[in-house]
Image (cartoon, rainbow, N blue to C red; front, top):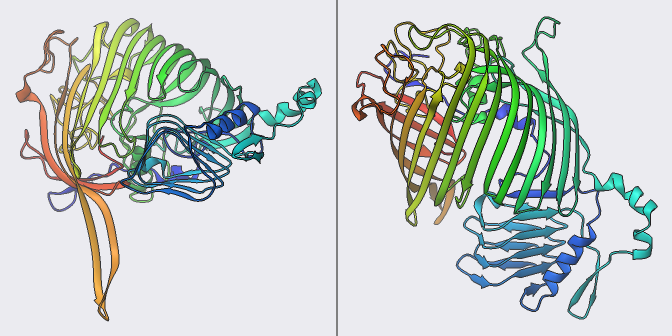
Amino acid sequence: MRRATSIRARIGAAALVLAALPASPLPLGAQVRDTLPTIMRLPADVAREVAGLFNATTTLRATDQTEIPAGRDVQGDVAVLNGPVIIAGHVAGRVLAINADVLLRRGARIDGDLLVVGGEVEGAEFATIGGEIRVYHPPLRYTMEGDLLVPQLGAPEVADQWWRRFERLGRDNANRLEIATAGVYNRVEGLPVRIGPVLYRDQGWGHIRFSANAIVRTASSFSSSTPDVGHTVLGEVRIGRQFGATVGGRLYDQVEGVETWQLSNAEVGLATFLFHRDYRDYYGRHGGQLFAALRATENADLTLSYGDERWSSRETRDPLALFDNGLAWRPNPAMDAARFHVANLTLRIDTRNDTFNPWAGWYLLADYERGTGAIDLAGVTSPGVRPLAGGMTRYQRAFFDVRRYNRISPSSALNLRMVLGGWVSGDPLPLERRLSIDGPGTVPGFDFRSGGADDVGTCTTAVAPAGRPAQCERVGLAQLEYRSDLRISLSDVRQGERRTRFRADGAWIFFADAGRGWLVNAPGTPLNYGRRDFPPLSTYRTDLGAGLDFDVLGIYAAKALSVPREPLNVFLRVRHRF
């Protein structure tokens, strides 16, 4: 929406409406794994593991409230019985909490695992955990023999009887009926909601999981002529905990975003629900997939998948938006109607000290895809972008997203992100696999889908198809930002006493971005470059900007440099820019 002034407010924010339907009842936090539901008994092997760690002569033990303040270093393992446990300092080992809650202060650091039995973990997002976090809700039943903890496991001769095991079978399964979001709030589905059973069994050596869900789309008319209800069916077996492998398969009929790497689901959802702006395009994805993954740690894995999928276009509906609800939505572009066999090899490495507020470490996502199939009906593209006829298509595509976070002082950091992806070999890419560079997730000095002819953001040539889809076969992006702590405090003095009325902790940001897209299979167009060539740096879109980031929400302003006539863009982001 263009204002009377030259400033355009472009909101890239997160969908609060999604928070009402959590995807899982497990505790939040990237590393926290809620191993068992509250109704189950603590497994005997876990009870023995807890007792062994507590009774070890090298473990520092406590039997009451324990606090490790900031600035204190504890060498070795720590075990606390009947806590609670409050950690703000550093533990150079494992932490065990028995029948106790754990509170992690900002800056807390645990080099090993965090194991909690009969309690909860709070503040994991503010701490650095070198190992795995395991949470078992059932308390430990025990007796003390002097200083030794002895778990009460019951009579083995009774517990081992087959009928006792049969009675426990239902309790050992974390079965539930799940009602959760099945994706992002968007202009073709509204809010997709999945409903169905989830069966989960912890085996000690790993777990077995099965789920079957129907997907109900709130923007649908529920008539027989529209694809109102989709589905997802998932089955997987995971071997090992921190290290190991996972194998499984899934069936699905769902709506997928064409480009999901620029903005998070939450940001796209709230921009749609609140401000009537959808920053993605969508297509129908119906088929099945087999996958296998190897895990070096919880933060490094290699996944191989193979799927047989049918792709289709989706029409724009009219879901509710709180503001500007009477305006027409941007059309969802016509995608390729096709059936493809798709193989992916994906590597993920994440050494960041914190997922949501990283100050140090690397993040790497590398994906290689090979697709073979037939296009029944080709989507509309700009003139010269690719051959108009459909038919057999074989393509290879790669995508790399590399980020480096560097703390350069106790209160500042310099972070870098580089993205390179697109066509590798074979036929021109289907529209479902095309890319773009524009909007708040990439080079925010340029508004989303706002370019004209020969647009290096979407690779539109003379005429833009309806909805202005991403048409680039390759993209390159570099983002640089400098962050420094910011503390805002408002206080007054009454009767000689100073009182704080308002306080907010955040960071101020300076950033620069450069990026563009181009074609490699469209000779004769000004956006085409050789298959082994890169466009000159002078042709890239560039911008500079600044903003304030308060962890959950940040407000930024960006000004285009390569095209000075572009107005200033003001936009919101949830969490960090990258």
